[in-house]
Length: 290
Image (cartoon, rainbow, N blue to C red):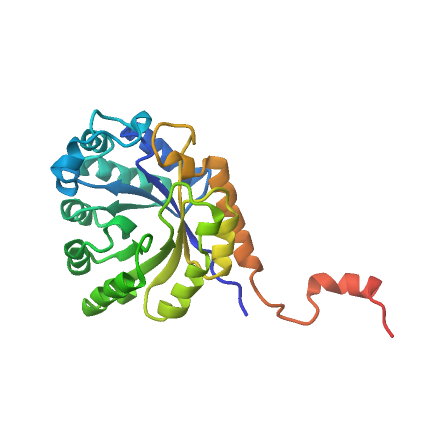
């Protein structure tokens, strides 16, 4: 049994840049060069389309993390326009790392499709947005990643059936996910990774794990259960303003995660021989023989 291929590590920068393009580029650089990840991921949404007027005008539920006077204004501050996303694509390419984005609404999806990234992510919050899913299936030629946080089994089946109808199951990556920030260990539910592999592994492109927990132990277990992608929120400082930082990894944590996932992937194999070459000298010196 050969060792499994190491999972691709996705550093979700999301909105942890605080709307600062220079900071976003620096985060790409650090994730690529110091943490050695495979991909970085941002978010794209159009607040005026995504939010109802009363939601847009409402105050942020956690004022200390607000970047604007209302929740809508807060979201606007954190948004990059499509030209800025194009700059992020270029910078990621210069750093040798894959760029991607989660899309939360149809206008955002249309804009990001135009950048032709390798993959686009559908977050748990919008995985039942039929128009959005159908747009990606019909107009986007890359791989579609989709998180299953806060999703019932019946809803999961509806999502899979939509991709099946469009002939895109083979381009779908399903992520086991619990939507919380941060998630306590008892709510991570790691066996969901194995369930998704057992249920859909022969039909979809891959199965991944999107974690919002503390530390990196659970991610290693996700690899052992079959995760082919591991996605973690990334920040330069967990004490920064913003609700996602507390459930994010700082550079050294993400570097260790990437290192450990690759090393453990090498170790997940059966012995190819009864006695390995590395054991032969010890066997000759130490092994008791009847």
